[in-house]
Length: 165
Image 1 (cartoon, rainbow, N blue to C red):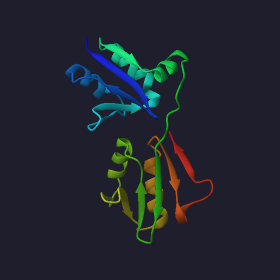
Image 2 (image 1 turned 90 degrees about the vertical axis):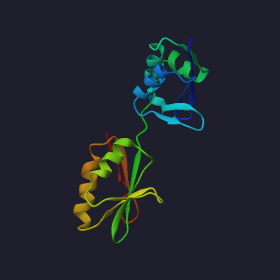
Image 3 (image 1 turned 120 degrees about the horizontal axis):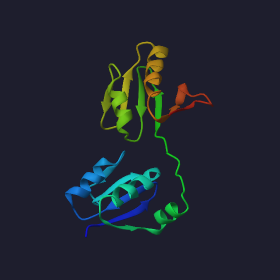
């Protein structure tokens, strides 16, 4: 019988199993999952732990669940979704936007006109044509993404972390 090990790894759920096409399909169906090619494990956000267990239970396999995940299940703990933070700062020529990789935010950045991605600095840059209008355009698009926005440097206000959910 196929075995799946589900453990907690920081703020993620780790899913490990010997290669099996059907189990890979289950892993790929998980929202916000990623595969770590070095450790050969699938990782999903911790707040998805109930869903991960449910999906693999339905996959007709033997589940081995570590005590920390089992305790969450037994106590019916809901883990709060951790929103990614989008950092926006500017220099005289452009807005610089950085964040930990998030597919939804990347799609939003790609939709901005005149944007470019700096692969070395791992940030997006949007040229400033009209300082206020350009920033408004960026913020407007981020309103449709599950994230927090942090305006930094000369853009910062003490209350300028905005949640978008």
